[in-house]
Image 1 (cartoon, rainbow, N blue to C red):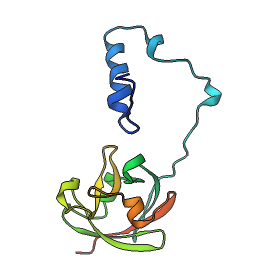
Image 2 (tube, one colour; image 1 turned 90 degrees about the horizontal axis):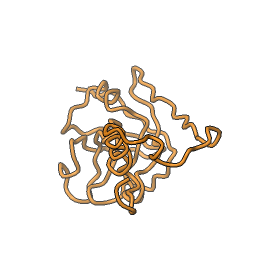
Image 3 (tube, rainbow, N blue to C red; image 1 turned 180 degrees about the vertical axis):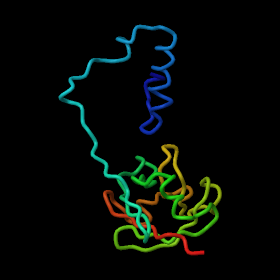
Image 4 (spheres, helix red, strand yellow; image 1 turned 30 degrees about the horizontal axis):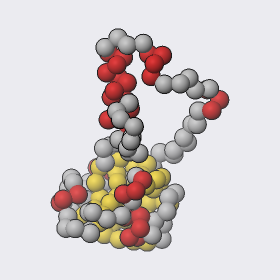
Length: 153
Protein backbone atom coordinates (compact mmCIF):
# COMPACT_ATOMS: atom_id res chain seq x y z
CA UNK A 1 0.00 0.00 0.00
CA UNK A 2 1.04 3.59 -0.50
CA UNK A 3 1.78 5.33 2.79
CA UNK A 4 0.11 4.99 6.14
CA UNK A 5 -2.66 7.56 5.61
CA UNK A 6 -4.87 5.80 3.09
CA UNK A 7 -7.72 7.58 1.37
CA UNK A 8 -11.22 6.33 2.09
CA UNK A 9 -12.18 6.60 -1.59
CA UNK A 10 -9.11 5.99 -3.78
CA UNK A 11 -8.51 2.29 -3.20
CA UNK A 12 -7.40 1.87 -6.80
CA UNK A 13 -4.53 4.26 -6.18
CA UNK A 14 -3.72 3.35 -2.59
CA UNK A 15 -4.20 -0.41 -2.49
CA UNK A 16 -5.09 -2.16 -5.74
CA UNK A 17 -2.57 -0.51 -8.07
CA UNK A 18 0.43 -1.12 -5.80
CA UNK A 19 -0.66 -4.73 -5.19
CA UNK A 20 -1.09 -5.28 -8.94
CA UNK A 21 2.33 -3.78 -9.62
CA UNK A 22 3.97 -6.05 -7.05
CA UNK A 23 2.24 -9.11 -8.51
CA UNK A 24 3.28 -8.21 -12.07
CA UNK A 25 6.82 -7.75 -10.82
CA UNK A 26 6.72 -11.34 -9.57
CA UNK A 27 6.59 -10.64 -5.84
CA UNK A 28 5.12 -13.29 -3.54
CA UNK A 29 1.33 -12.83 -3.58
CA UNK A 30 1.17 -14.01 0.04
CA UNK A 31 2.66 -10.66 1.06
CA UNK A 32 -0.33 -8.56 -0.04
CA UNK A 33 -2.02 -8.76 3.35
CA UNK A 34 -3.36 -11.05 6.03
CA UNK A 35 -5.50 -14.02 5.10
CA UNK A 36 -9.22 -13.44 5.54
CA UNK A 37 -11.70 -16.07 6.64
CA UNK A 38 -14.24 -16.65 3.86
CA UNK A 39 -17.06 -16.62 6.42
CA UNK A 40 -16.18 -13.05 7.40
CA UNK A 41 -16.46 -11.67 3.88
CA UNK A 42 -19.57 -9.59 3.27
CA UNK A 43 -21.59 -9.84 0.07
CA UNK A 44 -23.26 -6.59 -0.91
CA UNK A 45 -26.70 -7.17 -2.34
CA UNK A 46 -27.15 -4.16 -4.59
CA UNK A 47 -30.27 -4.38 -6.70
CA UNK A 48 -30.06 -3.26 -10.31
CA UNK A 49 -31.87 -0.12 -11.44
CA UNK A 50 -35.00 -0.71 -13.51
CA UNK A 51 -35.55 0.90 -16.89
CA UNK A 52 -39.10 1.00 -18.30
CA UNK A 53 -41.17 3.16 -20.65
CA UNK A 54 -41.58 5.88 -17.98
CA UNK A 55 -37.92 6.13 -17.02
CA UNK A 56 -35.30 4.78 -14.67
CA UNK A 57 -35.95 3.73 -11.07
CA UNK A 58 -32.93 3.22 -8.86
CA UNK A 59 -31.52 3.89 -5.45
CA UNK A 60 -29.04 6.18 -3.78
CA UNK A 61 -26.93 3.50 -2.09
CA UNK A 62 -24.23 5.57 -0.37
CA UNK A 63 -22.33 8.81 -0.10
CA UNK A 64 -18.65 9.07 -0.93
CA UNK A 65 -17.47 9.70 2.59
CA UNK A 66 -16.69 13.23 3.69
CA UNK A 67 -17.60 14.88 0.38
CA UNK A 68 -21.33 14.13 0.47
CA UNK A 69 -21.68 13.15 -3.19
CA UNK A 70 -24.42 10.60 -3.78
CA UNK A 71 -23.57 7.16 -5.16
CA UNK A 72 -26.38 5.38 -7.03
CA UNK A 73 -26.99 1.91 -8.39
CA UNK A 74 -27.67 3.47 -11.81
CA UNK A 75 -25.02 2.77 -14.45
CA UNK A 76 -24.05 5.62 -16.72
CA UNK A 77 -24.96 3.48 -19.73
CA UNK A 78 -28.49 2.88 -18.43
CA UNK A 79 -28.92 6.58 -17.67
CA UNK A 80 -27.84 7.55 -21.20
CA UNK A 81 -30.57 5.27 -22.60
CA UNK A 82 -33.07 7.85 -21.28
CA UNK A 83 -31.93 10.25 -24.04
CA UNK A 84 -30.18 12.94 -21.99
CA UNK A 85 -27.02 14.61 -23.25
CA UNK A 86 -24.50 16.58 -21.25
CA UNK A 87 -25.66 20.15 -20.83
CA UNK A 88 -29.34 19.23 -20.44
CA UNK A 89 -31.40 19.68 -17.30
CA UNK A 90 -32.69 16.47 -15.74
CA UNK A 91 -35.84 16.37 -13.62
CA UNK A 92 -35.26 13.84 -10.82
CA UNK A 93 -37.12 12.61 -7.79
CA UNK A 94 -35.08 11.59 -4.74
CA UNK A 95 -37.36 10.15 -2.10
CA UNK A 96 -40.24 12.65 -2.07
CA UNK A 97 -38.19 15.62 -3.30
CA UNK A 98 -38.23 16.74 -6.93
CA UNK A 99 -35.52 18.89 -8.48
CA UNK A 100 -34.00 19.91 -11.79
CA UNK A 101 -30.25 19.29 -12.07
CA UNK A 102 -27.84 19.92 -14.91
CA UNK A 103 -26.15 16.80 -16.36
CA UNK A 104 -22.47 17.64 -16.89
CA UNK A 105 -19.06 16.05 -17.43
CA UNK A 106 -17.29 17.50 -14.42
CA UNK A 107 -17.86 19.61 -11.31
CA UNK A 108 -16.39 22.78 -12.82
CA UNK A 109 -19.14 22.76 -15.47
CA UNK A 110 -21.48 24.36 -12.91
CA UNK A 111 -21.01 27.41 -10.65
CA UNK A 112 -19.80 26.97 -7.06
CA UNK A 113 -22.38 25.54 -4.66
CA UNK A 114 -24.64 24.41 -7.53
CA UNK A 115 -25.88 20.81 -7.89
CA UNK A 116 -24.83 18.57 -10.75
CA UNK A 117 -25.52 15.15 -12.17
CA UNK A 118 -22.50 13.29 -13.57
CA UNK A 119 -21.12 9.84 -14.37
CA UNK A 120 -18.62 9.06 -11.63
CA UNK A 121 -15.30 7.21 -11.74
CA UNK A 122 -17.14 3.90 -11.18
CA UNK A 123 -19.26 4.49 -14.28
CA UNK A 124 -22.35 5.16 -12.16
CA UNK A 125 -24.65 8.14 -12.03
CA UNK A 126 -23.67 10.48 -9.21
CA UNK A 127 -25.13 13.64 -7.73
CA UNK A 128 -22.94 16.34 -6.22
CA UNK A 129 -22.69 20.00 -5.32
CA UNK A 130 -19.67 21.84 -6.72
CA UNK A 131 -17.46 22.36 -3.64
CA UNK A 132 -20.26 21.34 -1.31
CA UNK A 133 -22.11 18.31 0.01
CA UNK A 134 -25.20 17.16 -1.87
CA UNK A 135 -26.23 14.95 1.06
CA UNK A 136 -26.03 17.82 3.57
CA UNK A 137 -27.46 20.50 1.27
CA UNK A 138 -30.54 18.46 0.35
CA UNK A 139 -30.84 16.31 3.48
CA UNK A 140 -30.37 12.98 1.69
CA UNK A 141 -29.52 9.87 3.74
CA UNK A 142 -29.07 6.60 1.82
CA UNK A 143 -30.70 4.33 1.06
CA UNK A 144 -33.37 6.31 -0.77
CA UNK A 145 -35.24 5.80 -4.05
CA UNK A 146 -34.42 7.87 -7.11
CA UNK A 147 -36.48 8.21 -10.29
CA UNK A 148 -35.46 9.83 -13.56
CA UNK A 149 -38.02 10.15 -16.37
CA UNK A 150 -37.16 9.71 -20.03
CA UNK A 151 -36.03 12.88 -21.77
CA UNK A 152 -38.79 14.64 -23.67
CA UNK A 153 -37.52 16.46 -26.74
